[in-house]
Length: 567
Ligand SMILES: [Zn+2]
Image 1 (cartoon, rainbow, N blue to C red):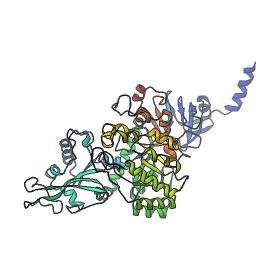
Image 2 (cartoon, protein in one colour; image 1 turned 90 degrees about the vertical axis):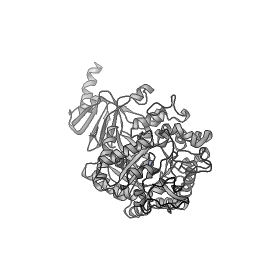
Image 3 (cartoon, protein in one colour; image 1 turned 30 degrees about the vertical axis):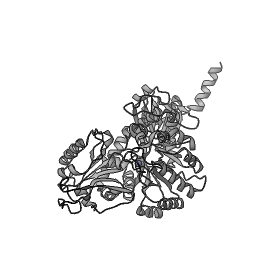
Image 4 (spheres, rainbow, N blue to C red; image 1 turned 180 degrees about the horizontal axis):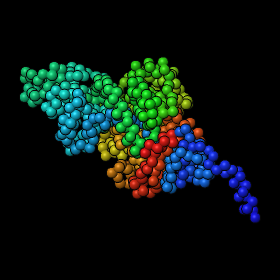
């Protein structure tokens, strides 16, 4: 008798009007992981005008909403849209317009690919390439321009290393950039060599583009290899990439990112022109990706934002400045306290003065901007933690970030918590650099590197990203590198320094809510809750419960931005 009474009552309360509420999308037959405080799971949800209306049991949602579209998740797992906490979204897209040199096994192979690309693209004035890594070659020597000069006697060529912190240019490119044998730069290195008439007589003199005329005495000339600030002169050439190229780059990047389930990216360093283009393309409706954009450190950019203030739309959030403290470990540009273990006396490069970092920090504080500084070496991390501390003074909600935080001396770590500084790290760096990082750092310092769990403990959160195109774009590989500490090829077996693996729950938070917090966007994204954006990534396994074997096979099967299907 009791049940007979209760059922009509429930119908009255719950379903008095069947499907009388409009929605754009209903997702059902799902295991929806809200990634909220209580770790709630639901079976179904409704989205309208890009916003989550309701989450709940299957029948409750299906009975209440009449939806334009329905997505049956077939029992698979729905997560808040995955984000990349530090990447180069536009840069990745622009790279797709260049010759891809990643995975090359020798300098000869680099030359071959570059030659073929040059022939296939006669319309391009510049032949640009990116992705070589001498650590992958049999002869692990840094390259020079000699062969490039022979292959490209009158077309400028610039080939960047995988980390973007070194490049090799041919004589024509050096000439365009105004680099001669007399050029010196601070915070960078124009690698040169002494040569004599007999040894390298056929090289071109970049100053005059004439064949070098030797008169028997040794003379210095640039080898074409440029480290860090030395190829900043080429930045203008990259930035002058015409609008059509940039548009294609952004759309290519968006397509690839949606395909792996990314719905928000933090672009680490854009100029005002590129930011304006992103906003235009979002307004036109062609660029649907949500972008947290860091403004590239530079007088012009800062002057612009001092006037305009931060930008916040549904898809674009600009309120931070990206600064570089040092270079990268691979090209020995990372600034270390003690010399490199594999290059005596060499400490790496500091890319600007302490006064400059202080000046930007004060600008950020005064303008309500977040300061995000690239720090790889232990010395760079210490320097910037000190500068941040000096300007911030104590606890605060400015959420300044250290990007990479790659080698941090344990004694310096408490500063993250003391000044509310967020470590923004890339789990795939640990497993990509692992094979050679110890040679650079030595047995003791390697224990302070890629120490993500130690860093997580300081403030209780981490931003997780990839730094793509330095690494691949796949957020599931970030997850695997964070929890299994192994690369896409399964290196090393058993995981890399497992004491610094993240827990499954934290890896998931890092790719969702913690990235949102680090981007001041947690009120709109990062968890699945009523009132937030309907940004979803659907995966075929339960990430937190999957065995390592299942994790390796995990796939993103669908993605939605604001309730619109993008994969
Ligand atoms: Zn970066």
